[in-house]
Structures are given as C-alpha cells and as structure tokens.
Length: 170
Image 1 (cartoon, one colour):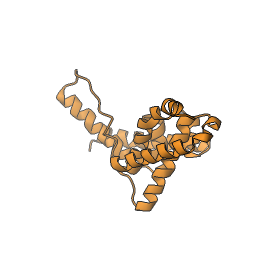
Image 2: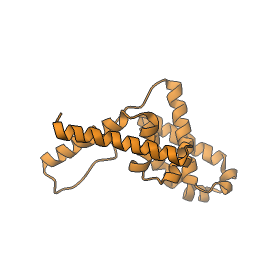
Image 3: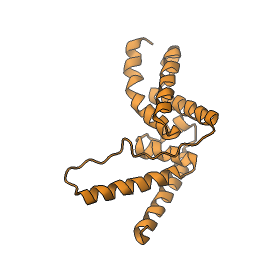
C-alpha cells in the first residue's frame, strides 16, 4: 500500500476512531494517543492491507484493543458523558426547550455510562456511530446473537429508566 491508498482508505475513519477511543477511555488526550498508535500500526502493517476487506472495522478493532490495553494498564474505567460532539442545534427552540433537551441528553449519557461494558460498547457503536450489526461483530469480536442481546438489554435499560423518570419526575 502506498501513501495515497492509506490516505483514501484509513484517514477518513480517524474521527470515528477518536470518538470510539474517547468513549472507551474518557479522555481526549488518551484517545488522540490511541488513534495515533492505530495509524502507526496500520501504516506499519500496510503489506496486509490487500487481504483486509473492511478497513474501517479492522481499524476499529485495533482501536478497541489499544484502548482496553490502556484501561487495563491505568486501572481505571471511563465514565465521562457523550455530551461532547452531540449538541443539538436548532435555532427555533426556546431557551427552555434547549435546556430540557440538554438535561435529557445528560441523563441518557449517564444511563449509558452506567451500563455494563459490553452493552455500553454495543449501544455506542450501533446508535451513536451507526455501525451495522456485522461490523459490530467484527469490531468487538462477538457473534451476532451476543451483539443483538447486548444491544436489546442496553436499550431496554435506558428506556425503562427514562420512562420511570418521565413518569415520576426526578
């Protein structure tokens, strides 16, 4: 693989890699470091590129593995919210509506952060990043049933908590 191929196949996914690493690590600096390591690993393994069908999924798997390695070495867990990068911008909303939406998103992010790790990863990849079930299977190295079960459980947990809050207030 030459630099032009690398530029066309790998560099376009760097923002997704960053968001995924950030979600796992909870630190933008560590996420940047992980993405840089991924780019180096991909460039150093460029001879293998011809055999890889889905470059994005392969890069996401490397990102996941490096992020988990970092978490293990630091002995900490990511608990930051998803508020960065998920701001809703509509000029027709009143300040009250904007505040309510922001508070609801904070609650949803807190609920997602409280999920077990597998469920949190699956719901992030599917509902935030928009990956297909097959791509999630490749990235997380799970079978299809595990992905579907974890996604179902994650969505159900978040939905039940939202219904409870909306029905009974805070």
